[in-house]
Length: 115
Image 1 (cartoon, rainbow, N blue to C red):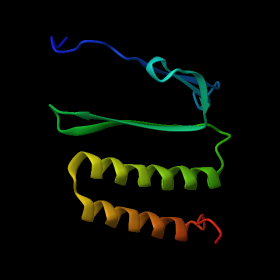
Image 2 (image 1 turned 180 degrees about the vertical axis):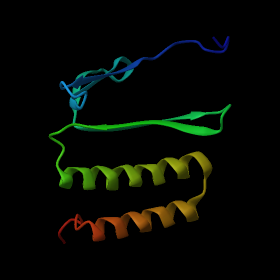
Image 3 (image 1 turned 135 degrees about the horizontal axis):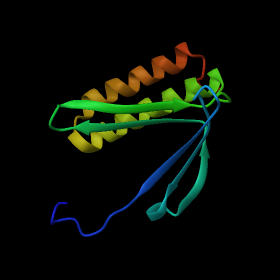
């Protein structure tokens, strides 16, 4: 372990599966965030492998996740990715382009809030 590390934080994800190994329940804990036994219907987890220069990912959703919820989940995730990318890189223009795409996505998926 790296000598610079002063503390360790743990995030735990539990996946309850049916007899076909399909997710039927997602729960997670994050001790530092005081989150315990939180229920979720879907998750995306992406990790960067610096040696392979590749993304490792896990995406799971339960049987109860509706198509409408999945559309909203993707939309909100894409928006949060634009925010994160801007904070990490200061690339405002491309982040705005991604937000514009998110608006287009929401429009096409018919999930724009009513005005």
